[in-house]
Length: 351
Image (cartoon, rainbow, N blue to C red):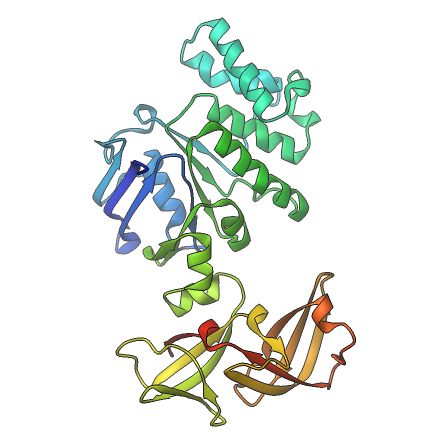
């Protein structure tokens, strides 16, 4: 069984009357890539700063490697923090930037040289060791900043929006690169991000925060397929919400259509049924079927997104079809389409 490296127990941080972090409890294991995901103001960065030691918790306990570090200053924790702004020294070469922290620790020159050479190979920048930061691309500067944090061999590496300064295509490439480097080094990574796709691609597990509270944690698949709250369902990926009412063990939309889905225990009468756009299929023979009118379409290469007006709800349903599924079908504005989805793909939440 993998050993727990970091344990948070009822961690709180108050700024006056504001609870930036409110009773968060989490266990993070060794060699895990963990993501703290939330909107602005959710408390994720404040929590990260407490793990780094730049903020002290108002309450609760932070245990790292079996030691309570709640009140331990940053320089005495086996933790490194990589900021969104890479803050590389412009007058130093790549190799010098990476070596700087080791020089401050007073390590022998041969050990510094060996460590820097090793990590330059890992980040695949050995040929650029003598270049200055202004001679590098954004992705290369990001890797240098990461190497500078990793070369000190921390037990825990914290990353605050590490890919925020990169363009969309480079972000996608660096997501996989970060995952590769983390696996190669075997160091626990905790990344703070508001980008859902980034968290889903990189993380072994994800924690969703809202208003300083932990809403849900789990693997990317658990978070995406089985959200425990309406907020989590709406925050991760795209979701259609259909207002429904409960009558015993049955759910009904506003037009009287029966909606198949699992009703939560002790659910109120007013509920919402939720279904992912990619779970809707053309002319499907399924428990749930609806006919509607195409309001708009968006061609995205492999995928086609449709907005479909239906009698189920005021908002149009978002439908995500593959190009193959849409081939030869009339999906122009005003066209009538019949869609279906399985009851097992319906999530139900209080309205």
